[in-house]
Image (cartoon, rainbow, N blue to C red; front, top):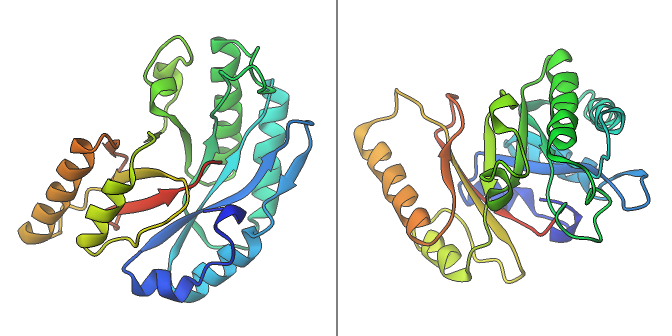
Length: 231
């Protein structure tokens, strides 16, 4: 979530069954300057207070490794003192647009930029992850994925019907604005057969509706279902 969701009632989010949240900590603007998301501190503090685990993402506009590392250092400073237990995410999207500051960045440079961010974050003791649009990540024209050592979150634009069906399953409420939905599954070997069957049903539903579903890594939380805004 980011400032585009407005002032979120995090107690309601927790009551709705969410276990954790991904919050935009900041972004680099088209002018090259770094900004903190207007609601970042509120979202982190209130989500924590409500009992959710926290992950953060930075929306990049880096054109070289120096800027990507700068974004990572800025992010680390911004989250200092906060209980971030999920990966710190490098969100790289939209670079194919001619209006993007990153439009002329090559495949090799783009990969190096991501690695500079991820390495800076992992060197500080956090887990790190690259996030991007599926059609950009799945094509080697844009990335050298084999060099990206950490888990990758995949996103794809989807339709309101998926939200409605997930809502019927009791996992998320319908959101009336434009969105992207990302489904990530965290495998926990100790979960019982009934709960695993439910996860598999949700996964099949999401895939049938064109969403991405991918195992990221093994953690205590078994799954996530996040409504993701444009930027």
